[in-house]
Amino acid sequence: MKNFFGKLTWQSIFAAYLAIFFLRNLLMPNVADDNSYKFIWDGAGKGNLINGIDPNRLQPVESFADILYSQWQHYFAWGGRTIAHIFAQFFVWQDKIFFDVANVFVFAALVLLLFKIGTGLTLQQMNKSYLLFTLAGMYFCAPSLIITTIWLTGTCNYLWMCTLILLFLLPFAEAYRRKTLSPITYYLLPILGLIAGWSIEPGAAVAVFITFVFVIHFRREKNLQLWMKVSFACLVVGFAILMFAPGNLHRADLISDHLQHDIAQVLYANFVGGFLPVFLREMILFVPIILYFIKAKTSPEVTRFILTFAAASVLSLMVMMCAPMFPERAGFPSTIFLLVASLAAFKEVLPLVKRFFLHRIKILVGLAAFWSISLLGCLYVEAEFLNQIVVRNEIVAAHKNDDLVVVPPIELPAWSETLLGSRTWDKLTLLLGGDLKSYDSNNRNIVFAHIHGLKKIVTAKE
Image (cartoon, one colour):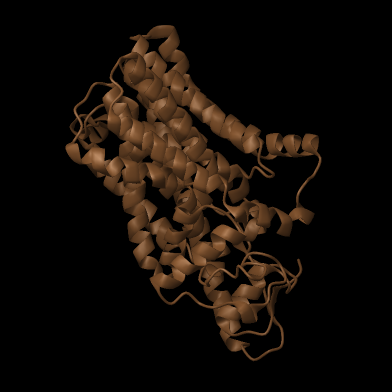
């Protein structure tokens, strides 16, 4: 076993993991918000995501101009995540295979960006230890993995936006380590800064914090360059565009009946439902950081870098604590920033880690087996989910002229909730929109019925 693993290259391991990731994308149908974003945003009405919407107002997206018009309406009537939803509306307009392929490349880019920013090494210095640490950190520590990295709309909001944020932060991290930058960086970074700031709230807010820390550092070092000032300014402008979208307030009015209005209750709900589960899932990523401070504190520069990104991770969670709601998936940027800090520490303690596992190969084999079984479990659950969607569509086709079409609800294996949690489909994910409801006024039901030319559709009551 040791010889077999020794012969594997990091590229072959990465390719195998990406192949599994691609298969998981293929097994994911368009569901929930994906269907709603197939239509131009109804800014003059209730939008596309509120229960009881009028399906006759829904107009399908048929051109890129429709997407831009839709997002103009969206910005003023729902929220400021324009960049993320331009991607989402573009891909739900196309055959899904285009997204499935693109998502693999974006996921790969995120992994490589995490490595480069965290370690400061070149891709030629990548090895199996860094790759597996990064992949395992994302798989086991990122919240609501199926929502944030597989489901189309969720992925455009979280995986894709965090990738753009890291792409923006990369030149600052490289400059911090006194590396030479490509001249094209100076011209592209302001544009990327605007996009990164205009991404998602818990990621963009912390990107502003991290960049501000870098700017202060460079100023103290008397090395604050024009491109840094301009890029930071563009980041702040993008963040302002995101946060001051009129649609944020309009959406709050539309869904006010579903929101807590007592501040203490909001903070408690956000802590129990968001902060705590995300933080507990991330805790293992603090192990390399703790080891670094105990065993391998190498330089003030490395220490400041680690502390900056670790603080950014916690700050991202604190940002969401102040939001009206804190779904677990919103903790995804926190995990990404913590992974950067953890990778920076992991690089410094890697010799210690290798010595520890040198004579404990069975532990590594056991962990690899557990990870492989978990991935196979995800594939099984997602294949079963897709099969039930196919059966549902057959029922819909056979009863298309009925006044009310009743379909069975999606059922998950009894063991998946306990063993896999939100790495794949779970009950909470289905409840939040992965499945239709047993009442026909639900938004998902209305949009589904409109797409399939039905009068009404519900799931059978359990």
